[in-house]
Image (cartoon, rainbow, N blue to C red):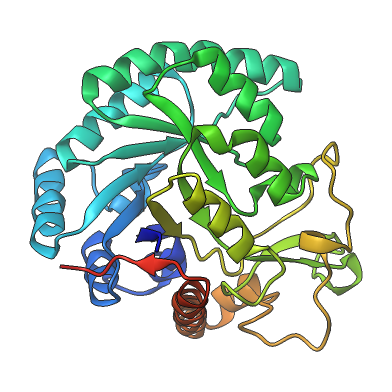
Length: 321
């Protein structure tokens, strides 16, 4: 029977970080351990290293010690493929004792130009990653189709640069998730497991079509089909990425998806405030404590569904300890 480690992503608790006084990386680690995860993936993207909650060497040592005390494995997440940025984050990763560092590109220009710039960056980053002993993972982050990402990684051609497959991000370039997976699966070393629905423009506050994050198991992504394929391909970890309340437009419809069908199916009304969280932006202003409570409910629903669904699919979740 195939077995996987479940990691929890700090982004799953982004509203806790923003709106619950005192919530920090140590709070997140305690929750992840209590919920039975064997690892965490911490977002260190932005000011104060965001959900890592600090930038100093003493802070890194304290986080590393707590990871060891709780017996949690750790990956780190950032954005930008620029070698100088990546060298700094690899140094942070060494201080924390991480295994893998996820990133995505932030170049502008045509698709061809962004592909060329990303290849050039990652050829340099590959040497830095090898020196640090940390694998770098390029995510399909709302910018490249699966074949485009595969082209980049084949050109870089390094065991120190691989892919993080996101279950839903291909939707933002109009690509079916299974199409993206088929293209990049040989390169995949980690995955963001999430769930999405589409919300018709007539139903959204801004009048735009949304791809929206919902509790895992309540959307239309083929989660178990994707997971079976990943595990069959040898993947040993899944990162639970509860992107509840996140929404983004379909930026480019160059992929093979059809809005309203399959993973792109529209959610039906009436909308439950947790299962279909259209009001998170307004709630953040009017009642942030309620927003935090709803986020926690969404995470709990997703965790319960995921563990039950994996068991039913014959996939063993490796226990803590």
